[in-house]
Picture 1 (spheres, rainbow, N blue to C red):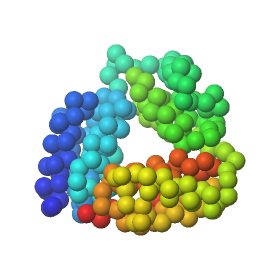
Picture 2 (picture 1 turned 90 degrees about the vertical axis):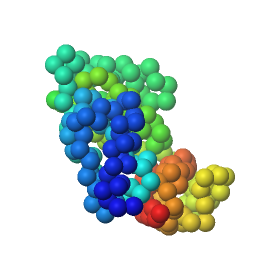
Picture 3 (picture 1 turned 60 degrees about the horizontal axis):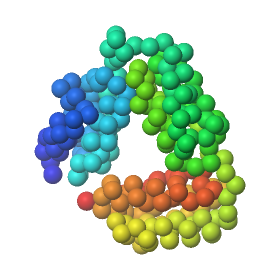
Picture 4 (picture 1 turned 180 degrees about the vertical axis):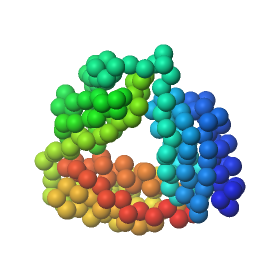
Length: 216
């Protein structure tokens, strides 16, 4: 697929998503790398636009350069935003109380610790959905006692083998001090995401080095 055709496909995908106002979003493509420029009204919309672009077949990577411009009616003080973020995280049972949030000029900075990657991702998602938030910086540290490297590698490979969408033989897994290194080649971003998710789901994992190549 040519870059111009890929840009059209991404633009169509943005138009198709009712959660995204694509009228102020410009799409350019250079050798499969998509760049999104323009303005959106919420941080959630910026995040959704990137996910839309990543879904399009042929996209290698997405540079999300969209600016978030909050309408005057939705502008809120940093203290008000922090209170809303903390309340939303408290009401979410998946987010541990060890995660804190600070706000500076509309940007939420998440700090503290968590035992699992999904807890960190949930906190980031919840914070990004609060009206008035301009951006989210995730500095939550993963701290968890883990099993041996061999046990981690084995559990991740088994998880990949159980996944009907993923060819487990195409991805290698290496573990060292809680850091997982994934290498190999997959045929779609969906396969890529499944492999990364399998790695993060293993107990004791604190970091995932993603060296998986998506080759169409």
